[in-house]
Each structure stands twice: as structure tokens, then as C-alpha cells.
Length: 271
Picture 1: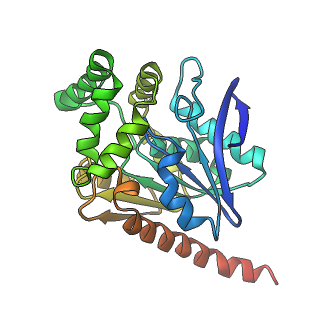
Picture 2: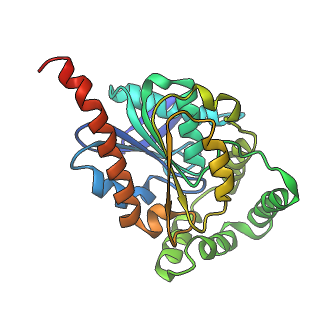
């Protein structure tokens, strides 16, 4: 995997294919490995860039006082290092937060956003969300990542023992301190005050059985000027692994829409 130094930390990423650039940003406790079904579907037509976010995969180091802004800077540094310019940015959960933040900080690097099972504000509100956060922290700290991986696997993939096993095998490689530091960064983040500054097209992908209520998703969508919503039926939080064919169809159809809207301006410029 290629590596670069950004924020005084070495980070790793995958780069496959050729064509317009698309960046796939994984969720908390995940890595670039979990995008394999999407890389295979996209690499014939796109330059697919897939970072391991700080503290994940082969990017094991974490900047001091980590924030979501650091993840956005990491993605920007990779795009600039590769000389790719603006890209379609796809983010799942934590990756969705990083994608939103990149669009706020560096809009010139973002052609479009695809936000999957994520939020515009991860700061806990109400006793239920606070209890969920507390339980995650306690399980990872007191019982370890192996037990925690079994708990999460059943929630993420209730209908597939094979995916549960794959998830557990990968998740236990996370360092507990890195996981908790990344989780703290996420829980201190909100892009809601800046959503109206995002002018690029946005696709919101939600799973029927995601953690996050669909009404919350629809509420933050009203603050985006150019957003559309697709709900994938029967899917849970990790939809990109659970239902890759259904998700890939949604993603590729959306990307084709974006290229279709770019075509008239390109033709108008002369051939």
C-alpha cells in the first residue's frame, strides 16, 4: 500500500484503477479492506482511492488531540499527493463525517458526496444515545475487543454468520486506545452549522435497519441545497458489506447521473 506523511503521522491507502477519482472512506473500527466489493465494481472506470484512516488498518498512529478535521486533512493530503484534483467522496458512518468535513474545509476537492448511514451531528443527545456511547466504551475497555467484536458483529450482520466471522477477524486488530480516541473525536463533532455552505451534489444512503433514525437523516437533509435520499431495504449499518450488489447499483447509478450533468458543460466548452 502507498504511504504518505500528513499531520506528522504516516498514513496508508489503496489506489486502484483509472479514470475520474473516487474516494471511499470507511467507518469506525473498519479499514480499507471492507471496501473490496466496491473497489472491484469501480476500478474499471474510476481511480479508486481508499485510505486507512488514522488509527485504523495500516495507519496505526493517531495525531495528538485527534479531530474529524484531521481525517479530512488526511484525505486531502492523499488527493494532493496523487495529483487527482477534485473527487467523488463516499463515506460510511465515521467516514461520512470525514466526507462532510472535507466538503466544508476543502470544497474544491469535492465533486460530489455520498453519505452512508451517517449523521451531520454525532454529539450524543438524550439518555438513550448517552447510554449507547457509555456501553461501547465500557465493553471495549473492560471486556476487550474480542468480546466487543462479537456484540457488534451480531448487530451489523444478524443474517450472516460468515460476515460476522469476517468482521470479528478484522475488528479485533484495532488497538483499543485508538478506537476510543477516534470515537471521542466523532462524538465531539458536528457539521450542522456548516451544511448550508455545501453546494456540491449529495446522495444520502440509509439502511432500513440502521442505528440512526431516518427522520434524523431527513431533518439534516433539509439544510443541504442539492441532496437526494435512497433507502436500501433489509439492510443494516454496514450495508456496503452486507448488501454490496444493492449498494453498488445505487452508487454507480448516482455517479452516472453526475457525469451526465457534467457532459453539457464539457460539450459547450468545445471538443
